[in-house]
Image 1 (cartoon, rainbow, N blue to C red):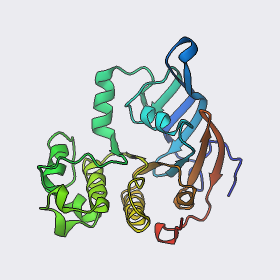
Image 2: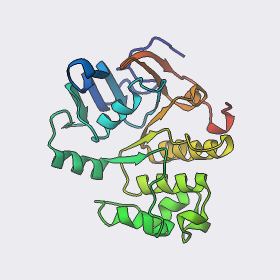
Image 3: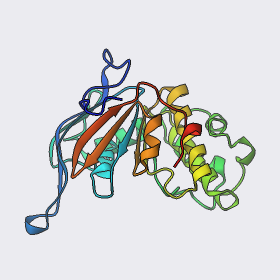
Length: 250
């Protein structure tokens, strides 16, 4: 590990690749006057295509704000952020909607599945509007749920529902997968299964993965770990030798 590496510097094999995300001087302020909250403070960051990045930090450190700006769900108060050739920091709401639809897959702590629809039908909601979706059954197979594809969410465990949420996120073939505490509502063993799915998507499809967690044990599976605190990237670790999710313990 290189604990003091720069957040604009990638891990092994990234030196000659273009960043999928690039941020300079990124800031976010909520409220005004005496009620101002500085969620991000002058963040400089590059994330490289195909990289697996973990954002680690306590509640209020700025992790979710950073992820939401990268995903086009929020806009910065200052600075610049780009996705490839797209400048997100001054994009219109219509442009951000198109960006989210065409380039980003989201996975949240809570699954947000439609309870009246089967697994396949939940994914079909995405493929109906996606530009170049993969076959639904292929996405379901990638998360290991082929035998459950005609089940409703209430017939699935929490871990299975989260895997459906991942399949729904990747079925449109996004360049990036943004995950906000994807194991936060799951027990230890189920959480590791979900992390294995995310690692598989990253490795087999080359999808850039950014995962928020407060669980330091997850850091070992990342290419880079960005430690956030007080709205800043406080520390960066590069894992020259990543471990598999099955080797994690917490």
